[in-house]
Image (cartoon, rainbow, N blue to C red; front, top):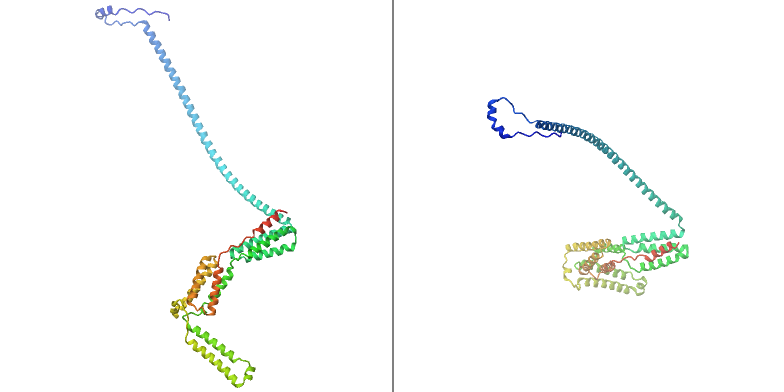
Length: 380
């Protein structure tokens, strides 16, 4: 490979001799230099080697791609099987979780039931372990709380007063020094409850029922026949009194005395009848005399409705509404009914009494007794 290339011929003489050479020997070929063929062979060898290397590299690459594709397909298949297995495991885990949740709920219910039974058992044991005094204090406390609820419902202090009396009598039978403080508190609360003056709704409703029952019998200013019948009854009573004089007085005075007594009785009856013919009455509101007989029925019914509304308001503890209805009923009694009649006077007094007592008064709580019971129970 250390050979030197031969010198190339000069192109000028060759060009000058070209026509004559072409003319002399036209079929003679031009010889190639010996070095150019070697380079061509080397290039061909290199190209062949490169092509062979590229072919080998392409074949290796194709084989690697095929192996990668196969590996990818295999891994994809493995991933699909793993995903299916994961879904199956997830379903199984979900079912297991549901079963565990159901079992946990059942266990919680059983634990709660056991806790409740344990609490009840502890309370039973405590109630059995209490002494007689503690049981009495617990019963008195419970009775007072029930009485408070009854007083709040009925609006009357009577249930609380009765319960306080019974508790004091029950504690007095034990004669224990530790219960003396409770008895003193009971006495204080009993005095406070009695002095509270709580409205007794039951008594007030009974009085209103009595007033409603008597409304139809009350005389009106515009009904003189009621007054005439009253005077006739008074005259009959006077005549009966005169006729029922003792027989001894008649026998003592003789026939003249008997005639005089009869004449006096007849004269008194006659004079009462004469006085009943003319009446002089002071009427502050003239419209009371203008009530027609057919309007008297509606007047009495309106008065009954007022009283019934007041009764319902008392039962529902609406004392303001009851006061308003009672004032209207009192105004109707004073305006349209004869205030000189004893029944009207009695009914008016009943309505005024109910109006004065229909007020909201809170039932006092026996806080001193409850505190004394708590102290006595804690000091055991």
